[in-house]
Image (cartoon, rainbow, N blue to C red; front, side, top):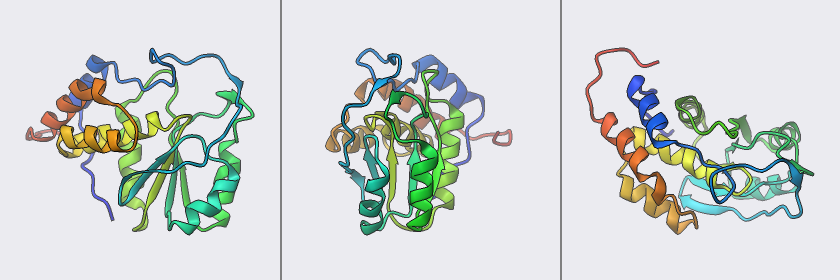
Length: 194
């Protein structure tokens, strides 16, 4: 079982808003109109012993995930971003058939919010012990949702950035937002979590 803190109240909302916490798939953080998906990849990138991230997966990738012992698949990509993109319901059905839990936490062009990290934390807390695989178009949104959740939990930001870099993702531009979330995790709270 993985343990994350309950969602932070206003502090987290401010941190996300101030940092412009959007993990878009484009180079400038924006997303283009849906276009045809030309290649799906099955590359699973290890971030930690219990967390893997991937670009868009297909139904055919579910058996590989099951063979790796994956217990939960988290989809951070909204349906309909690209022509030919597998539907969330199809991946969920294949995951369920393989005995893997599945949750859809789509991050769209409006960005990553405290609701995304709270849903991620709940999914991780409820997950059976074993590896978790998260995916989106490139894997960037998935690793950022995890990174913000880890920062909220109090994990050192330099370690979060290093883990992401080792998996091939440069999230150093999100250091200010993660630092705010990390620092807020150390502040005593007098109000109940949202």
